[in-house]
Length: 640
Ligand SMILES: Nc1ncnc2c1ncn2[C@@H]1O[C@H](COP(=O)(O)OS(=O)(=O)O)[C@@H](OP(=O)(O)O)[C@H]1O
Image (cartoon, rainbow, N blue to C red; front, side, top):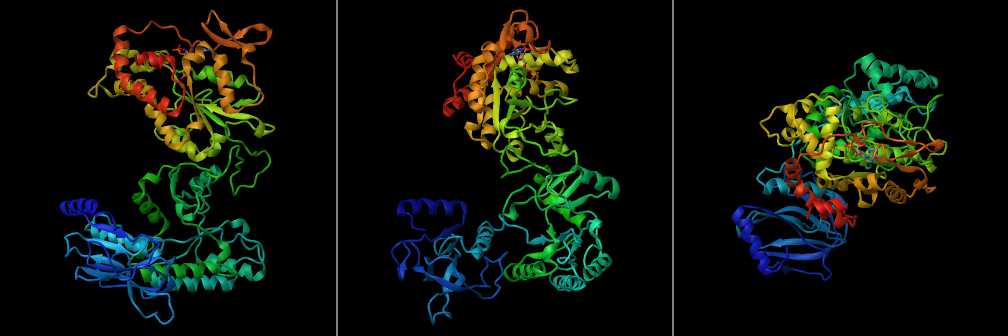
């Protein structure tokens, strides 16, 4: 509002030429202005006021979501409000308030004002302060809608359902009596007048039915007559046996949870779909419906308040429809992101509502992940790490061997319990370094976000080798695994495949080439993790001097005790690689699948790939320099 004339002229020209409106806020200032003219506007201001008794101008065209609900008899936060006195018909008051001074409570000073643009062809909504005051946030949304000619507008329809879980679950003495149930039904009747069709949705666990004092048991019986359903308790993190039961016994399609995704305040909670069951987010618990009945009071008050100050139309629909509407509105939330933010690694994570029975254990989370990409020496790294007495690897998977492959692909939908079961329970989890290696994590679009949500403090180990060498090794890996496309097409054909080529060939090309765009993928990881949580290992050095790399890695992970790899790794002439020294001074090397023998890459293909990866390599070098990471020698050579 108070920029210098030159910038003001530029800004106004822009606003006029493109028909853009302006929302302005008056900054707090030290000196008080009384009746001062606002430069360039036919408008006078008075600053540094304490205000109260707010009301809105119902005739102002800006009001859309906000309703002029009467006079709000409360003080505005702060004592540095500015009020406006217009001197042109272009201005229409939007909001009034009275000064917080004795005998002035009837006065109406303008705290927010609409400039219709009749003075200088620019429409504005001006606020005499910031958005700390809740009503101004609503007015701000309306200002955006008005000034954008309705293009930036939120729908006015809202759906609401109150879900009361565990309706019978509470200790004797704090359960619902008949009187409480009657109060619930009476409240439901009153709410129905404000929200057509309102109905509390009750869920139960039958185990606790008739488990209270006689008057509470009478309450239980009355509730049973009302309507209850066994489709609640969408506990989070997901408790798989519950989902099994929901599917098998009741064919439940929708349920509720109050935890996901472990973010506070509660308004940050979200929905998700797991095993085709929609989890909406609206769940409350019994305790405030019996006894003090605070929940009933709160809901009625909130709804009255919303109806008083907004033009929102409140509706209710049954749970299934609500779930469908929810995910139609927020399609991005269909995919869950399992998270335990706030719980530090090592985390102990029994399902929150599950009583740990015999044979059940509390597991610890991995402290670091080897994320790949494939063919960069990750198996060697995994094997060398697992030799360390202080490091514990995941159990192997029946399908994917040493790799769990949880955060990418379908396994993610098996839930956290499935993942955690891959980790042994160390006697003293805090002194052991659990880790897993899944080389497919590196380039997965959703992987960094998922890892961050579940393991925010985890350290990340990535390995890189020349991208073209990686691509060639991967191609031979696929041939060795009898991949039909890899067997059918030559390496040249794969790396030169165009968008018009058959899908299997294009897929192969992408999987072959995309992981080597190292900088692009690393940047994605760094969107979620600070650089000090990530180490980048030169796979060439790992191959030639694994002891040096393992020492670096131990330092990065701050692992105790320091393991002397010199005595435990030895170059094996026959294998052509470093291998593990075993008892009896023999060596145990990786299997035939690692360190394969295949013909060298055609020079023309090597040239093609060098050009292809050039921009990615340039970006990688820049990234490494920016992060103060060492630049591998092969990268320097590639860029010469
Ligand atoms: N010590 C040791 N022993 C055997 N192999 C070693 C070793 N160090 C690095 N390498 C290189 O690792 C390459 C395989 O990489 P990955 O283990 O990441 O492959 S995989 O993604 O897990 O399939 C593998 O690639 P290929 O040579 O193409 O088979 C090796 O070059």
